[in-house]
Length: 274
Image 1 (cartoon, rainbow, N blue to C red):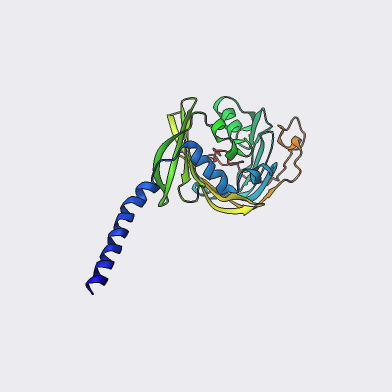
Image 2: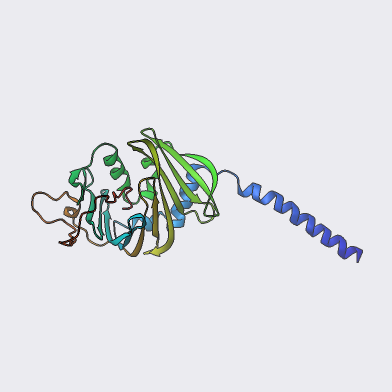
């Protein structure tokens, strides 16, 4: 019995020692390249990502604060082109486009306008196709800020400052996937922070795609639930160009003729296009 007791004591001591040393080893701070490499592999690997040359998405867009919702479509492709179209009930059609060089926005409240300054910079950054392969270019000077938690999960946080605005990327320490993105932005009252959460990852053509995206900011909150994601469909470059004159929009959507124009209409911030 003494021998058995001694054996259990030895096992217990070893387990206790492992419990003390394993977390320390696991928590060793990775490099930026370690985190980004883990992310790319978690998505399916560089080869799988590079096989994708275009992406189209459809689903439902909701603005809970306004009790508004409607369908959305996004299109993106190599050349860093993107288009987002949203139908918001009681408001109308909202469109944001970037043709690889110029950006534009169109909505019932502000009408058609060209993007400039910070808005254009955001559109350019948000339109980089296959962004996971280019994060060090999108966010120059990325550093590892340290560990944190998102929804109870351990994450590694990478941080960069671009044009005096801080950007933080949160990667799940276990899965390697991007689960949160904080962007500091300029507002009339100073600097503010916009946060996007990425959830419900599912494989599409060997690439993991986040099917639920939630956006929060001091001005507005919204969420996007994708119903379908397709890769490598043919998308004409003309779709991303700013509509001119009376020419029909590249991605038309019907606005109800009698829809009232709200006096306190939602302004959609943050570019969820890939």
